[in-house]
Image (cartoon, rainbow, N blue to C red; front, side):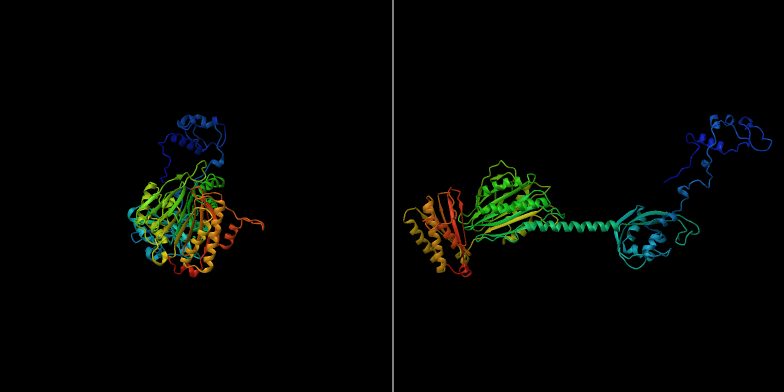
Length: 608
Protein backbone atom coordinates (compact mmCIF):
# COMPACT_ATOMS: atom_id res chain seq x y z
CA UNK A 1 0.00 0.00 0.00
CA UNK A 2 1.55 3.35 -1.10
CA UNK A 3 0.53 6.65 0.41
CA UNK A 4 1.29 9.68 -1.83
CA UNK A 5 1.15 13.34 -0.74
CA UNK A 6 -0.62 15.93 -2.87
CA UNK A 7 1.66 17.02 -5.68
CA UNK A 8 1.79 20.52 -7.24
CA UNK A 9 1.68 18.85 -10.63
CA UNK A 10 -1.79 17.43 -10.10
CA UNK A 11 -4.66 19.44 -11.70
CA UNK A 12 -6.13 22.06 -9.38
CA UNK A 13 -3.38 21.68 -6.82
CA UNK A 14 -1.98 25.24 -7.30
CA UNK A 15 -5.45 26.72 -6.88
CA UNK A 16 -5.99 24.85 -3.63
CA UNK A 17 -2.55 25.83 -2.35
CA UNK A 18 -3.24 29.52 -3.02
CA UNK A 19 -6.54 29.22 -1.20
CA UNK A 20 -4.80 27.74 1.82
CA UNK A 21 -2.26 30.63 1.78
CA UNK A 22 -5.14 33.10 1.53
CA UNK A 23 -6.78 31.65 4.63
CA UNK A 24 -3.55 31.42 6.57
CA UNK A 25 -2.44 35.09 5.98
CA UNK A 26 -3.23 37.54 8.90
CA UNK A 27 -5.96 40.17 8.37
CA UNK A 28 -5.99 43.84 9.55
CA UNK A 29 -7.29 44.50 13.03
CA UNK A 30 -10.02 46.94 11.89
CA UNK A 31 -11.33 48.94 9.00
CA UNK A 32 -13.17 48.13 5.88
CA UNK A 33 -11.65 46.05 3.15
CA UNK A 34 -10.97 49.18 1.10
CA UNK A 35 -8.37 50.34 3.68
CA UNK A 36 -6.16 47.36 3.14
CA UNK A 37 -2.71 48.15 1.80
CA UNK A 38 -1.60 46.60 -1.48
CA UNK A 39 0.35 43.46 -1.11
CA UNK A 40 3.27 44.88 -3.06
CA UNK A 41 3.48 48.11 -0.97
CA UNK A 42 5.30 48.76 2.26
CA UNK A 43 4.11 47.57 5.61
CA UNK A 44 1.37 49.44 7.49
CA UNK A 45 2.29 52.09 10.00
CA UNK A 46 1.77 49.71 12.93
CA UNK A 47 4.20 47.27 11.24
CA UNK A 48 1.40 44.71 10.71
CA UNK A 49 1.62 43.08 7.30
CA UNK A 50 -1.37 43.80 5.13
CA UNK A 51 -3.49 40.96 3.90
CA UNK A 52 -2.92 40.24 0.23
CA UNK A 53 -5.81 40.91 -2.12
CA UNK A 54 -7.10 38.73 -4.83
CA UNK A 55 -6.14 41.31 -7.45
CA UNK A 56 -2.43 40.85 -6.86
CA UNK A 57 -2.01 37.09 -6.19
CA UNK A 58 -3.08 35.88 -9.59
CA UNK A 59 -3.66 32.28 -8.31
CA UNK A 60 -7.10 32.42 -6.73
CA UNK A 61 -10.10 34.26 -8.26
CA UNK A 62 -10.99 37.55 -6.59
CA UNK A 63 -14.40 36.19 -5.74
CA UNK A 64 -12.89 34.05 -3.04
CA UNK A 65 -11.88 37.13 -1.05
CA UNK A 66 -15.53 38.19 -0.87
CA UNK A 67 -16.61 34.99 0.94
CA UNK A 68 -17.08 35.00 4.67
CA UNK A 69 -14.32 33.61 6.81
CA UNK A 70 -14.57 29.84 7.31
CA UNK A 71 -15.85 28.58 10.63
CA UNK A 72 -13.21 28.38 13.33
CA UNK A 73 -13.86 24.60 13.71
CA UNK A 74 -12.48 24.05 10.19
CA UNK A 75 -9.17 25.68 11.02
CA UNK A 76 -7.26 22.56 12.10
CA UNK A 77 -3.83 22.93 13.58
CA UNK A 78 -1.23 20.26 12.78
CA UNK A 79 -1.74 18.81 16.25
CA UNK A 80 -5.50 18.37 15.58
CA UNK A 81 -5.12 16.65 12.18
CA UNK A 82 -5.99 12.84 12.21
CA UNK A 83 -2.95 10.55 12.12
CA UNK A 84 -1.99 8.89 8.86
CA UNK A 85 -1.23 5.17 8.46
CA UNK A 86 2.47 6.01 8.48
CA UNK A 87 2.08 7.39 11.96
CA UNK A 88 0.44 4.23 13.40
CA UNK A 89 2.53 1.84 15.49
CA UNK A 90 2.77 -1.63 14.00
CA UNK A 91 3.83 -2.90 17.40
CA UNK A 92 0.69 -1.44 18.93
CA UNK A 93 -1.56 -2.87 16.24
CA UNK A 94 -0.15 -6.41 16.48
CA UNK A 95 -0.28 -6.25 20.24
CA UNK A 96 -3.96 -5.37 20.32
CA UNK A 97 -5.42 -7.94 17.91
CA UNK A 98 -6.77 -11.20 19.44
CA UNK A 99 -5.00 -13.45 16.93
CA UNK A 100 -1.67 -15.10 17.67
CA UNK A 101 1.28 -13.23 16.14
CA UNK A 102 4.95 -14.16 16.17
CA UNK A 103 7.75 -12.55 14.14
CA UNK A 104 10.97 -14.43 13.44
CA UNK A 105 13.95 -13.51 11.31
CA UNK A 106 16.93 -15.18 9.73
CA UNK A 107 17.44 -18.74 8.51
CA UNK A 108 17.22 -20.07 12.06
CA UNK A 109 13.97 -18.22 12.65
CA UNK A 110 15.16 -16.27 15.65
CA UNK A 111 12.36 -14.79 17.64
CA UNK A 112 11.84 -11.06 17.28
CA UNK A 113 8.36 -10.60 18.69
CA UNK A 114 5.28 -12.31 20.09
CA UNK A 115 2.12 -10.40 20.86
CA UNK A 116 0.04 -10.60 24.01
CA UNK A 117 -2.47 -13.09 22.57
CA UNK A 118 0.37 -15.48 21.74
CA UNK A 119 1.86 -15.16 25.22
CA UNK A 120 -1.62 -15.63 26.72
CA UNK A 121 -1.97 -19.01 25.00
CA UNK A 122 1.58 -20.37 25.12
CA UNK A 123 3.19 -18.21 27.78
CA UNK A 124 5.97 -15.57 27.42
CA UNK A 125 8.78 -16.38 25.02
CA UNK A 126 12.42 -15.18 25.18
CA UNK A 127 13.44 -12.99 22.25
CA UNK A 128 16.56 -13.68 20.23
CA UNK A 129 16.43 -17.46 20.51
CA UNK A 130 15.72 -19.77 17.60
CA UNK A 131 12.14 -20.86 17.02
CA UNK A 132 13.03 -24.47 17.83
CA UNK A 133 14.16 -23.32 21.27
CA UNK A 134 11.83 -20.42 21.99
CA UNK A 135 8.72 -21.65 20.13
CA UNK A 136 8.61 -25.44 20.56
CA UNK A 137 4.86 -25.38 19.97
CA UNK A 138 5.45 -24.40 16.32
CA UNK A 139 7.63 -27.47 15.93
CA UNK A 140 4.90 -29.66 17.43
CA UNK A 141 2.39 -28.14 15.05
CA UNK A 142 4.63 -28.87 12.06
CA UNK A 143 5.12 -25.22 11.12
CA UNK A 144 8.92 -25.05 11.09
CA UNK A 145 9.27 -26.80 7.67
CA UNK A 146 6.54 -24.53 6.37
CA UNK A 147 8.42 -21.45 7.62
CA UNK A 148 11.54 -22.68 5.79
CA UNK A 149 9.53 -22.90 2.56
CA UNK A 150 8.15 -19.39 3.06
CA UNK A 151 11.62 -17.97 3.68
CA UNK A 152 13.03 -19.65 0.56
CA UNK A 153 10.12 -19.01 -1.82
CA UNK A 154 9.00 -15.61 -0.56
CA UNK A 155 5.38 -16.78 -0.78
CA UNK A 156 2.89 -17.14 2.06
CA UNK A 157 1.65 -20.55 3.15
CA UNK A 158 -1.38 -21.57 5.22
CA UNK A 159 -2.25 -24.67 7.23
CA UNK A 160 -5.77 -25.16 8.46
CA UNK A 161 -7.28 -26.41 11.69
CA UNK A 162 -4.17 -27.36 13.63
CA UNK A 163 -5.02 -28.69 17.07
CA UNK A 164 -3.39 -27.04 20.09
CA UNK A 165 -4.00 -29.49 22.94
CA UNK A 166 -4.70 -28.32 26.45
CA UNK A 167 -1.72 -28.24 28.75
CA UNK A 168 0.68 -26.11 30.77
CA UNK A 169 2.10 -22.87 29.50
CA UNK A 170 -0.31 -20.00 29.10
CA UNK A 171 -4.10 -20.33 29.04
CA UNK A 172 -4.73 -23.80 27.58
CA UNK A 173 -7.49 -25.15 29.74
CA UNK A 174 -9.10 -26.89 26.72
CA UNK A 175 -8.15 -28.04 23.26
CA UNK A 176 -8.22 -25.34 20.62
CA UNK A 177 -7.84 -25.19 16.86
CA UNK A 178 -5.99 -22.54 14.87
CA UNK A 179 -5.41 -21.79 11.20
CA UNK A 180 -1.84 -20.55 10.77
CA UNK A 181 -0.60 -18.34 7.94
CA UNK A 182 3.12 -17.79 7.48
CA UNK A 183 3.92 -14.61 5.53
CA UNK A 184 7.40 -13.48 4.37
CA UNK A 185 8.45 -10.05 5.68
CA UNK A 186 11.59 -7.94 5.96
CA UNK A 187 12.54 -6.95 9.47
CA UNK A 188 14.35 -3.62 9.05
CA UNK A 189 16.96 -2.10 11.37
CA UNK A 190 15.26 -0.28 14.22
CA UNK A 191 18.08 1.01 16.39
CA UNK A 192 17.56 0.55 20.10
CA UNK A 193 14.68 -1.77 20.68
CA UNK A 194 11.57 0.23 21.71
CA UNK A 195 10.24 -2.81 23.55
CA UNK A 196 12.03 -5.68 25.29
CA UNK A 197 10.16 -8.16 23.11
CA UNK A 198 11.67 -6.70 19.93
CA UNK A 199 15.12 -8.17 19.47
CA UNK A 200 16.01 -7.54 15.83
CA UNK A 201 18.25 -4.49 15.40
CA UNK A 202 19.54 -5.26 11.90
CA UNK A 203 17.63 -5.76 8.66
CA UNK A 204 16.78 -9.42 7.96
CA UNK A 205 14.28 -11.43 6.01
CA UNK A 206 11.79 -13.00 8.32
CA UNK A 207 8.41 -14.68 8.69
CA UNK A 208 5.26 -13.40 10.35
CA UNK A 209 3.25 -16.24 11.87
CA UNK A 210 -0.43 -15.38 12.20
CA UNK A 211 -2.76 -17.80 13.99
CA UNK A 212 -6.55 -17.32 13.84
CA UNK A 213 -8.60 -19.42 16.23
CA UNK A 214 -11.21 -21.62 14.54
CA UNK A 215 -12.22 -23.75 17.51
CA UNK A 216 -15.88 -22.81 17.27
CA UNK A 217 -15.99 -23.64 13.57
CA UNK A 218 -14.26 -26.98 14.10
CA UNK A 219 -16.54 -27.94 16.96
CA UNK A 220 -19.59 -26.92 14.93
CA UNK A 221 -18.36 -29.02 12.01
CA UNK A 222 -17.75 -31.99 14.31
CA UNK A 223 -21.22 -31.65 15.80
CA UNK A 224 -22.64 -31.48 12.28
CA UNK A 225 -20.73 -34.59 11.22
CA UNK A 226 -21.88 -36.42 14.35
CA UNK A 227 -25.46 -35.36 13.65
CA UNK A 228 -25.20 -36.53 10.04
CA UNK A 229 -23.71 -39.83 11.20
CA UNK A 230 -26.62 -40.34 13.61
CA UNK A 231 -29.12 -39.45 10.89
CA UNK A 232 -27.47 -41.83 8.45
CA UNK A 233 -27.43 -44.59 11.06
CA UNK A 234 -31.13 -44.01 11.73
CA UNK A 235 -31.90 -44.00 8.00
CA UNK A 236 -29.92 -47.20 7.40
CA UNK A 237 -31.62 -48.79 10.42
CA UNK A 238 -34.99 -47.83 8.95
CA UNK A 239 -34.00 -49.22 5.57
CA UNK A 240 -32.76 -52.49 7.01
CA UNK A 241 -35.80 -52.84 9.26
CA UNK A 242 -38.01 -52.70 6.16
CA UNK A 243 -36.01 -55.50 4.54
CA UNK A 244 -36.54 -59.13 5.62
CA UNK A 245 -34.63 -59.76 8.83
CA UNK A 246 -34.13 -63.39 7.84
CA UNK A 247 -34.74 -64.87 4.42
CA UNK A 248 -37.15 -67.75 4.11
CA UNK A 249 -35.26 -70.84 2.99
CA UNK A 250 -37.23 -72.92 0.48
CA UNK A 251 -36.92 -76.68 0.42
CA UNK A 252 -35.60 -76.88 -3.12
CA UNK A 253 -33.52 -73.70 -3.38
CA UNK A 254 -30.61 -72.11 -1.58
CA UNK A 255 -30.87 -68.33 -1.35
CA UNK A 256 -28.84 -65.45 0.06
CA UNK A 257 -29.10 -61.69 -0.25
CA UNK A 258 -27.06 -58.63 0.63
CA UNK A 259 -27.75 -54.93 0.90
CA UNK A 260 -25.02 -52.29 0.69
CA UNK A 261 -26.10 -48.69 1.44
CA UNK A 262 -24.48 -46.15 -0.85
CA UNK A 263 -22.46 -43.06 0.02
CA UNK A 264 -21.88 -41.50 3.41
CA UNK A 265 -24.88 -39.21 3.66
CA UNK A 266 -28.09 -39.92 5.50
CA UNK A 267 -30.18 -40.31 2.35
CA UNK A 268 -30.34 -44.06 1.84
CA UNK A 269 -32.14 -45.43 -1.16
CA UNK A 270 -35.19 -47.63 -1.72
CA UNK A 271 -33.68 -50.96 -2.80
CA UNK A 272 -35.38 -54.09 -1.49
CA UNK A 273 -35.58 -57.85 -1.96
CA UNK A 274 -37.69 -60.70 -0.61
CA UNK A 275 -38.15 -64.46 -0.71
CA UNK A 276 -41.71 -65.78 -0.23
CA UNK A 277 -42.68 -69.44 0.06
CA UNK A 278 -45.97 -69.97 -1.76
CA UNK A 279 -46.73 -73.55 -0.78
CA UNK A 280 -46.57 -76.80 -2.73
CA UNK A 281 -42.81 -76.27 -3.05
CA UNK A 282 -43.14 -73.06 -5.05
CA UNK A 283 -41.11 -69.96 -4.17
CA UNK A 284 -41.47 -66.28 -5.13
CA UNK A 285 -38.34 -64.18 -5.59
CA UNK A 286 -38.62 -60.39 -5.58
CA UNK A 287 -36.22 -57.49 -6.03
CA UNK A 288 -37.05 -53.83 -6.59
CA UNK A 289 -35.70 -50.30 -6.50
CA UNK A 290 -37.46 -47.04 -5.66
CA UNK A 291 -35.63 -44.23 -7.42
CA UNK A 292 -34.39 -41.37 -5.31
CA UNK A 293 -33.01 -41.28 -1.79
CA UNK A 294 -34.16 -40.43 1.68
CA UNK A 295 -36.83 -41.47 4.12
CA UNK A 296 -39.57 -40.96 1.52
CA UNK A 297 -38.01 -43.49 -0.86
CA UNK A 298 -37.54 -45.95 2.01
CA UNK A 299 -41.18 -45.50 3.08
CA UNK A 300 -42.46 -46.15 -0.45
CA UNK A 301 -40.20 -49.19 -0.62
CA UNK A 302 -41.68 -50.56 2.61
CA UNK A 303 -45.23 -50.16 1.32
CA UNK A 304 -44.41 -51.87 -1.98
CA UNK A 305 -42.66 -54.76 -0.26
CA UNK A 306 -45.65 -55.29 2.04
CA UNK A 307 -48.00 -55.20 -0.93
CA UNK A 308 -45.91 -57.75 -2.83
CA UNK A 309 -46.15 -60.19 0.07
CA UNK A 310 -49.91 -59.68 0.25
CA UNK A 311 -50.37 -60.21 -3.50
CA UNK A 312 -48.07 -63.23 -3.43
CA UNK A 313 -50.37 -64.93 -0.91
CA UNK A 314 -53.06 -64.86 -3.59
CA UNK A 315 -50.76 -67.17 -5.61
CA UNK A 316 -51.32 -65.17 -8.77
CA UNK A 317 -49.18 -65.40 -11.91
CA UNK A 318 -46.20 -63.01 -11.90
CA UNK A 319 -47.66 -60.58 -14.45
CA UNK A 320 -50.85 -60.22 -12.41
CA UNK A 321 -48.85 -59.43 -9.29
CA UNK A 322 -46.92 -56.75 -11.20
CA UNK A 323 -50.17 -55.38 -12.62
CA UNK A 324 -51.64 -54.96 -9.12
CA UNK A 325 -48.40 -53.44 -7.87
CA UNK A 326 -48.41 -50.96 -10.75
CA UNK A 327 -51.78 -49.56 -9.73
CA UNK A 328 -50.80 -49.42 -6.05
CA UNK A 329 -47.55 -47.56 -6.81
CA UNK A 330 -49.47 -44.80 -8.57
CA UNK A 331 -51.73 -44.43 -5.54
CA UNK A 332 -48.85 -44.33 -3.04
CA UNK A 333 -46.84 -41.61 -4.79
CA UNK A 334 -47.16 -40.88 -8.50
CA UNK A 335 -43.90 -38.88 -8.43
CA UNK A 336 -41.83 -41.86 -7.25
CA UNK A 337 -40.47 -44.13 -9.98
CA UNK A 338 -39.96 -47.75 -8.95
CA UNK A 339 -38.81 -50.87 -10.77
CA UNK A 340 -39.45 -54.46 -9.76
CA UNK A 341 -39.09 -58.02 -10.97
CA UNK A 342 -41.25 -60.82 -9.55
CA UNK A 343 -40.33 -64.43 -10.30
CA UNK A 344 -41.79 -67.79 -9.22
CA UNK A 345 -39.88 -71.08 -9.13
CA UNK A 346 -41.81 -74.34 -9.41
CA UNK A 347 -39.64 -77.40 -8.72
CA UNK A 348 -41.98 -79.60 -10.75
CA UNK A 349 -41.33 -77.51 -13.87
CA UNK A 350 -37.69 -76.53 -13.30
CA UNK A 351 -38.26 -73.00 -14.55
CA UNK A 352 -38.41 -69.40 -13.34
CA UNK A 353 -41.60 -67.69 -14.46
CA UNK A 354 -41.16 -63.93 -14.08
CA UNK A 355 -42.51 -60.50 -14.92
CA UNK A 356 -40.48 -57.29 -14.91
CA UNK A 357 -41.52 -53.65 -14.50
CA UNK A 358 -38.60 -51.70 -15.89
CA UNK A 359 -36.03 -53.72 -13.95
CA UNK A 360 -32.68 -55.07 -15.07
CA UNK A 361 -32.67 -58.63 -16.50
CA UNK A 362 -32.27 -61.72 -14.34
CA UNK A 363 -29.00 -63.56 -15.03
CA UNK A 364 -29.02 -67.39 -15.03
CA UNK A 365 -25.86 -69.49 -14.93
CA UNK A 366 -26.32 -72.94 -16.42
CA UNK A 367 -24.58 -76.05 -15.03
CA UNK A 368 -21.92 -75.75 -17.77
CA UNK A 369 -20.98 -72.23 -16.57
CA UNK A 370 -22.58 -70.24 -19.38
CA UNK A 371 -24.62 -67.19 -18.37
CA UNK A 372 -27.77 -66.00 -20.13
CA UNK A 373 -30.05 -63.01 -19.65
CA UNK A 374 -33.76 -63.34 -19.02
CA UNK A 375 -34.36 -60.08 -20.83
CA UNK A 376 -37.96 -60.45 -22.01
CA UNK A 377 -40.62 -59.44 -21.37
CA UNK A 378 -40.03 -56.10 -19.63
CA UNK A 379 -42.66 -53.43 -19.12
CA UNK A 380 -42.35 -49.83 -17.93
CA UNK A 381 -41.62 -48.95 -14.27
CA UNK A 382 -44.31 -49.21 -11.63
CA UNK A 383 -46.80 -46.39 -11.34
CA UNK A 384 -46.93 -45.49 -15.02
CA UNK A 385 -50.28 -47.23 -15.63
CA UNK A 386 -51.87 -48.15 -18.93
CA UNK A 387 -49.52 -51.06 -19.63
CA UNK A 388 -50.57 -54.70 -19.82
CA UNK A 389 -47.73 -56.70 -18.26
CA UNK A 390 -46.89 -60.21 -19.40
CA UNK A 391 -44.89 -63.12 -18.00
CA UNK A 392 -41.84 -64.86 -19.38
CA UNK A 393 -39.82 -67.87 -18.27
CA UNK A 394 -36.25 -69.09 -18.14
CA UNK A 395 -34.98 -72.61 -17.25
CA UNK A 396 -33.57 -73.09 -13.73
CA UNK A 397 -32.63 -76.75 -13.71
CA UNK A 398 -30.72 -78.52 -10.92
CA UNK A 399 -27.14 -77.30 -10.86
CA UNK A 400 -27.97 -73.80 -12.13
CA UNK A 401 -28.04 -70.44 -10.34
CA UNK A 402 -29.70 -67.05 -10.82
CA UNK A 403 -28.93 -63.54 -9.62
CA UNK A 404 -31.39 -60.66 -9.21
CA UNK A 405 -29.87 -57.22 -8.55
CA UNK A 406 -30.47 -53.46 -8.57
CA UNK A 407 -28.86 -50.88 -10.83
CA UNK A 408 -26.39 -49.72 -8.19
CA UNK A 409 -24.39 -52.89 -8.86
CA UNK A 410 -23.83 -52.27 -12.57
CA UNK A 411 -24.49 -48.58 -13.27
CA UNK A 412 -21.58 -46.11 -13.48
CA UNK A 413 -21.61 -42.46 -14.48
CA UNK A 414 -18.81 -42.86 -17.02
CA UNK A 415 -19.99 -46.12 -18.62
CA UNK A 416 -23.04 -47.51 -20.38
CA UNK A 417 -25.20 -49.71 -18.17
CA UNK A 418 -24.91 -52.58 -20.70
CA UNK A 419 -21.17 -52.61 -20.01
CA UNK A 420 -21.94 -53.04 -16.34
CA UNK A 421 -24.32 -55.93 -17.01
CA UNK A 422 -21.66 -57.61 -19.17
CA UNK A 423 -19.12 -57.20 -16.38
CA UNK A 424 -21.62 -58.80 -13.98
CA UNK A 425 -22.10 -61.71 -16.40
CA UNK A 426 -18.34 -62.35 -16.44
CA UNK A 427 -18.12 -62.11 -12.65
CA UNK A 428 -21.15 -64.38 -12.16
CA UNK A 429 -19.74 -67.00 -14.53
CA UNK A 430 -16.70 -67.42 -12.28
CA UNK A 431 -18.35 -66.94 -8.88
CA UNK A 432 -18.54 -70.36 -7.27
CA UNK A 433 -19.56 -71.35 -3.76
CA UNK A 434 -22.57 -70.95 -1.53
CA UNK A 435 -25.02 -68.11 -2.30
CA UNK A 436 -23.67 -65.81 0.44
CA UNK A 437 -20.13 -66.29 -0.88
CA UNK A 438 -21.33 -65.51 -4.41
CA UNK A 439 -22.88 -62.25 -3.14
CA UNK A 440 -19.58 -61.15 -1.62
CA UNK A 441 -17.62 -62.09 -4.74
CA UNK A 442 -19.96 -60.14 -6.99
CA UNK A 443 -19.59 -57.05 -4.79
CA UNK A 444 -15.81 -57.28 -4.93
CA UNK A 445 -15.70 -58.02 -8.65
CA UNK A 446 -17.86 -55.01 -9.47
CA UNK A 447 -15.81 -52.74 -7.18
CA UNK A 448 -18.53 -52.04 -4.61
CA UNK A 449 -17.05 -50.49 -1.46
CA UNK A 450 -18.39 -48.49 1.49
CA UNK A 451 -17.73 -45.32 -0.52
CA UNK A 452 -19.93 -46.43 -3.44
CA UNK A 453 -22.43 -43.67 -4.22
CA UNK A 454 -25.53 -45.83 -4.83
CA UNK A 455 -27.37 -48.50 -2.89
CA UNK A 456 -26.86 -52.10 -4.01
CA UNK A 457 -29.13 -55.10 -3.42
CA UNK A 458 -28.28 -58.62 -4.62
CA UNK A 459 -30.34 -61.82 -4.39
CA UNK A 460 -28.60 -65.07 -5.39
CA UNK A 461 -30.61 -68.27 -5.94
CA UNK A 462 -29.17 -71.74 -6.44
CA UNK A 463 -31.01 -74.91 -7.48
CA UNK A 464 -28.56 -77.50 -6.20
CA UNK A 465 -27.98 -80.79 -7.95
CA UNK A 466 -28.52 -83.45 -5.30
CA UNK A 467 -26.77 -86.81 -5.21
CA UNK A 468 -26.41 -89.68 -2.77
CA UNK A 469 -28.29 -89.54 0.51
CA UNK A 470 -29.41 -85.97 -0.11
CA UNK A 471 -31.15 -87.05 -3.32
CA UNK A 472 -33.07 -89.75 -1.40
CA UNK A 473 -34.88 -87.00 0.56
CA UNK A 474 -36.46 -85.54 -2.60
CA UNK A 475 -38.93 -87.54 -4.61
CA UNK A 476 -41.79 -86.94 -7.06
CA UNK A 477 -44.60 -89.24 -8.09
CA UNK A 478 -47.57 -88.42 -10.38
CA UNK A 479 -50.69 -90.23 -11.58
CA UNK A 480 -52.92 -89.20 -14.49
CA UNK A 481 -56.63 -89.49 -13.65
CA UNK A 482 -59.15 -89.97 -16.46
CA UNK A 483 -62.33 -89.73 -14.42
CA UNK A 484 -64.95 -92.31 -13.79
CA UNK A 485 -65.83 -94.32 -10.74
CA UNK A 486 -62.46 -96.05 -10.69
CA UNK A 487 -60.48 -92.79 -10.37
CA UNK A 488 -60.86 -92.40 -6.60
CA UNK A 489 -59.84 -96.00 -5.72
CA UNK A 490 -56.87 -95.79 -8.09
CA UNK A 491 -55.76 -92.52 -6.48
CA UNK A 492 -55.96 -93.99 -2.97
CA UNK A 493 -54.05 -97.11 -3.99
CA UNK A 494 -51.39 -95.06 -5.74
CA UNK A 495 -50.93 -92.70 -2.77
CA UNK A 496 -50.75 -95.61 -0.31
CA UNK A 497 -48.10 -97.42 -2.33
CA UNK A 498 -45.95 -94.34 -2.84
CA UNK A 499 -46.08 -93.22 0.79
CA UNK A 500 -45.26 -96.73 1.95
CA UNK A 501 -42.22 -96.82 -0.36
CA UNK A 502 -41.07 -93.53 1.13
CA UNK A 503 -41.16 -95.21 4.57
CA UNK A 504 -43.33 -92.69 6.33
CA UNK A 505 -44.79 -93.49 9.73
CA UNK A 506 -48.21 -95.17 9.73
CA UNK A 507 -49.86 -92.00 11.03
CA UNK A 508 -48.38 -89.77 8.31
CA UNK A 509 -49.08 -92.47 5.73
CA UNK A 510 -52.77 -92.55 6.63
CA UNK A 511 -53.05 -88.74 6.71
CA UNK A 512 -51.44 -88.50 3.27
CA UNK A 513 -53.79 -91.10 1.78
CA UNK A 514 -56.82 -89.35 3.31
CA UNK A 515 -55.76 -85.96 1.93
CA UNK A 516 -55.16 -87.40 -1.55
CA UNK A 517 -58.58 -89.10 -1.49
CA UNK A 518 -60.42 -85.90 -0.48
CA UNK A 519 -58.65 -83.70 -3.04
CA UNK A 520 -59.28 -86.19 -5.84
CA UNK A 521 -62.93 -86.51 -4.83
CA UNK A 522 -63.30 -82.72 -4.86
CA UNK A 523 -61.74 -82.54 -8.32
CA UNK A 524 -63.96 -85.33 -9.66
CA UNK A 525 -67.07 -83.58 -8.39
CA UNK A 526 -66.28 -79.96 -9.29
CA UNK A 527 -63.49 -80.12 -11.87
CA UNK A 528 -63.01 -81.25 -15.44
CA UNK A 529 -60.38 -83.41 -17.11
CA UNK A 530 -57.46 -83.63 -17.49
CA UNK A 531 -56.75 -84.48 -13.85
CA UNK A 532 -53.50 -85.36 -12.16
CA UNK A 533 -52.47 -86.42 -8.66
CA UNK A 534 -48.91 -85.44 -7.69
CA UNK A 535 -47.08 -86.48 -4.54
CA UNK A 536 -43.83 -84.80 -3.61
CA UNK A 537 -41.55 -85.15 -0.64
CA UNK A 538 -38.68 -82.90 0.36
CA UNK A 539 -36.37 -83.03 3.32
CA UNK A 540 -38.95 -81.08 5.35
CA UNK A 541 -42.48 -81.77 4.10
CA UNK A 542 -44.90 -83.99 2.18
CA UNK A 543 -46.93 -82.26 -0.55
CA UNK A 544 -50.17 -83.59 -2.08
CA UNK A 545 -51.47 -81.74 -5.15
CA UNK A 546 -54.36 -82.33 -7.57
CA UNK A 547 -54.80 -80.40 -10.84
CA UNK A 548 -57.77 -80.31 -13.21
CA UNK A 549 -59.07 -78.29 -16.14
CA UNK A 550 -61.60 -76.09 -14.30
CA UNK A 551 -60.44 -72.67 -13.06
CA UNK A 552 -63.03 -72.28 -10.27
CA UNK A 553 -61.09 -72.15 -7.01
CA UNK A 554 -62.52 -73.99 -4.04
CA UNK A 555 -63.09 -72.29 -0.71
CA UNK A 556 -63.52 -73.63 2.74
CA UNK A 557 -67.07 -73.38 4.08
CA UNK A 558 -69.05 -74.67 7.02
CA UNK A 559 -71.09 -77.76 6.10
CA UNK A 560 -74.45 -78.22 7.78
CA UNK A 561 -75.28 -81.61 9.35
CA UNK A 562 -77.73 -82.41 6.57
CA UNK A 563 -75.27 -81.52 3.74
CA UNK A 564 -73.87 -84.43 1.79
CA UNK A 565 -71.01 -82.37 0.33
CA UNK A 566 -68.75 -79.50 1.31
CA UNK A 567 -66.66 -81.30 3.89
CA UNK A 568 -63.67 -82.30 1.76
CA UNK A 569 -61.72 -79.03 1.90
CA UNK A 570 -62.55 -78.63 5.61
CA UNK A 571 -61.14 -82.10 6.31
CA UNK A 572 -57.97 -81.31 4.35
CA UNK A 573 -57.53 -77.96 6.13
CA UNK A 574 -57.93 -79.68 9.49
CA UNK A 575 -55.44 -82.51 9.03
CA UNK A 576 -52.77 -80.71 6.95
CA UNK A 577 -50.19 -78.13 8.03
CA UNK A 578 -51.38 -75.79 5.26
CA UNK A 579 -53.42 -75.86 2.09
CA UNK A 580 -54.17 -73.61 -0.87
CA UNK A 581 -55.23 -73.33 -4.47
CA UNK A 582 -54.20 -71.40 -7.56
CA UNK A 583 -55.03 -71.05 -11.20
CA UNK A 584 -52.64 -72.73 -13.62
CA UNK A 585 -51.38 -71.11 -16.86
CA UNK A 586 -53.29 -73.62 -18.99
CA UNK A 587 -56.66 -72.45 -17.71
CA UNK A 588 -57.22 -74.94 -14.91
CA UNK A 589 -56.43 -74.97 -11.19
CA UNK A 590 -54.29 -76.74 -8.65
CA UNK A 591 -55.37 -77.58 -5.09
CA UNK A 592 -52.67 -78.67 -2.65
CA UNK A 593 -51.88 -79.39 0.98
CA UNK A 594 -48.70 -79.93 2.98
CA UNK A 595 -47.63 -82.03 5.95
CA UNK A 596 -44.56 -81.05 7.94
CA UNK A 597 -42.28 -84.04 8.44
CA UNK A 598 -41.10 -85.00 11.91
CA UNK A 599 -37.38 -84.46 12.42
CA UNK A 600 -36.53 -88.14 12.26
CA UNK A 601 -38.45 -88.80 9.05
CA UNK A 602 -37.25 -85.59 7.45
CA UNK A 603 -33.64 -86.77 7.58
CA UNK A 604 -34.00 -90.52 7.76
CA UNK A 605 -33.44 -93.01 4.92
CA UNK A 606 -36.00 -93.35 2.21
CA UNK A 607 -36.41 -95.93 -0.47
CA UNK A 608 -36.83 -95.00 -4.07
